[in-house]
Length: 349
Image (tube, rainbow, N blue to C red; front, side, top):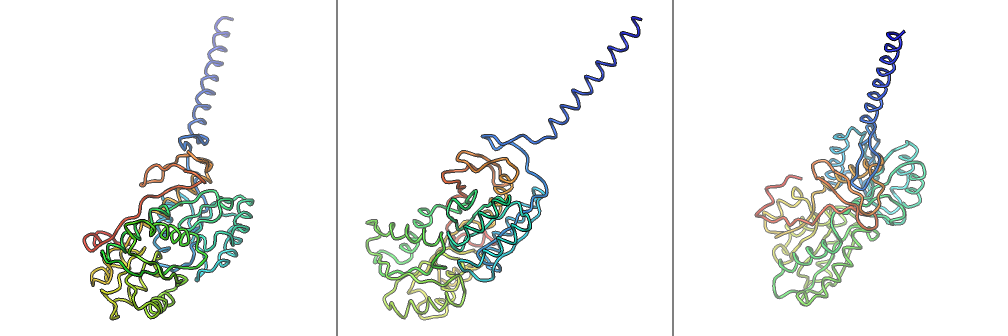
C-alpha cells in the first residue's frame, strides 16, 4: 500500500515537473511584448514594400537597396514599387495595390504631404503600418517618419557651403529645387531663407527659386534659364540629388564654370567628377542606404509590436544601433555630412 502511494506521488511530481518545463519552454519561445526599451522579437516573413517618389532615381535606388538589406537581415519579404515620374497623386494607385496585397509595412517618400493621405489611412485601416522617409506626409497619415536630418541642420549646411564657396564678397544666389509640392524641399527652403537673415550672410541675396521636378533634363534647362535671367548670379543651391547633378553638368561644360558656385545635396558617385574638375567645391548628404535601412527596421519593429510609435519608444536597427522615437513620431538618422575633394574617394554610393 505504501509502495503504491509513493509511486503515485512520484508520478504526480514527474508530471508537474514536465508541465513546468513545458511552460518555461513556451515562455522562452514567446516574444516579449512592447516595452519602454523596445523589447520583443521581430516577426519573420513580414511583407515590407518601399514606395519612393520615383523608381530608377539613383538616390532612391540607393536608399531602397539599404532597406532591402535590412529586410533580408530580419527575415522579411522586400518589394519596391512606384511611379516613374514624381507627381502629387502618382503614388496613390500603388498604395491601394499594396493595401490589397495585405502588405505589412509600406515605406514611402511622399511626393505631396496631403495627396496620398487618404490612401495611406485606408491602408492603415486594412492593417498596414506606414513609415515615411526622406519626405513626410501629415503626421495623421503615418505611424513613423524617418528623418534623414533636421530641416534646420540641412538649411545651415547648405547656406554655409554656398557662402564659403562664393567668398567674402557674397552676391546673388538661387535655389534649384525638386517639385513645388515636395514636403522636405519646402521645409528646407523656408529654413534656408531664415538662415540667410543672420548677420554673417548679409551679403548673400536669394533672387529666385525654380523647380526641376526631379527630372534631369528639366533641371538642366532650369539651370541654364537661371543664368540667363540673372547674369550676376554667384551661386546655386540645389537640395535634390537629381537637380544638383544636372546643374553641375551644365556648369562644367559652360563659361560659368568656376564663376558660378554650386552646392546642394548629392551622392558621391554622382558628384565625384564635378568635384575633381573644380565645378563643385563641396556638397552635403546623409547616407541614403542608411536611411532606407533604418526605415525598414523601424517598420519591422512597428509591425512586430516592439514599438507603437509613441515618443520615447526605443528600438535597435541592426548595424546602426539603437534609436529613440522623438516628438511627432519622428526618428532622426543624424546630421548631414560634407563631401569635398579631400574625402570623396572614401565613399561609394
